[in-house]
Image (cartoon, rainbow, N blue to C red):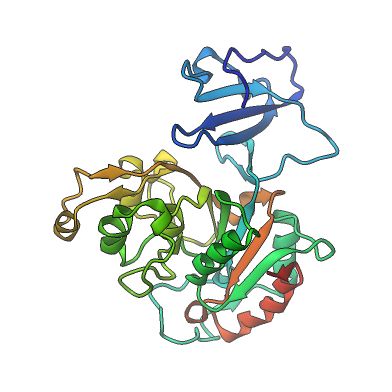
Length: 333
């Protein structure tokens, strides 16, 4: 971790610079680095960028032309700044419904989507996304797994961690037509699972009122597996008046505000959860950085693992032709 202090100021030119923003949690002192690529006019290091407690800092770092910085990358709509997020491992968490338009809602267990009402991206479109946005290659396949229901991401990650295939905490690039951040199961999660020590949370109950395909990401976060979550959604996905995807539940964010950029799980008593009295949590979990970006604005060079969910209730049968295409980019692990 760099020593806290005033970062060096760049010369006053318009050349492109790479600034490294780093932070460390007070619990495990793990470092999280955010790379901001732009010109001197875009980013000016200041005294306020450095914490007196050594928790955060900003410094100029060299960009090696022969090696990408890696990690998830998003483009700010307002500033056009490229952000690269780096950690040891980054999982592409892909749902086949990302390639289906329009996005279907509330269809769990209702069979396949009708072909006449939904269209699916072509295999060439899928390849373009995997190669241009995710920088995957069929000649350098990464560990991966495909399955029917997205809730199985949790099971695969758990096994990979146990087998030493995946190192936690890891970043997640969640490429999906839905956020999968909550639907049912919140009473069990907030009052029961979070009451357990972290090392006893890896075997939660599965089902409609427990861990399911609509909330598994929260359970992965509750296990402290996720260091950062980026939600990549189709351009056709609806947004609220404030500009955030319209399926983000306020109650899982810091100050109940998706704009906060932090997922913050809170433990409550069972009685408070059932009554909806959630103003006084018994405990607040460590926050997890969160960001969201439309598919056309997303690109990353740091994917190390991939999981793919078929999500039969949210895709027409014609979408299955994309599964073998995606399978060319990973080796089953």
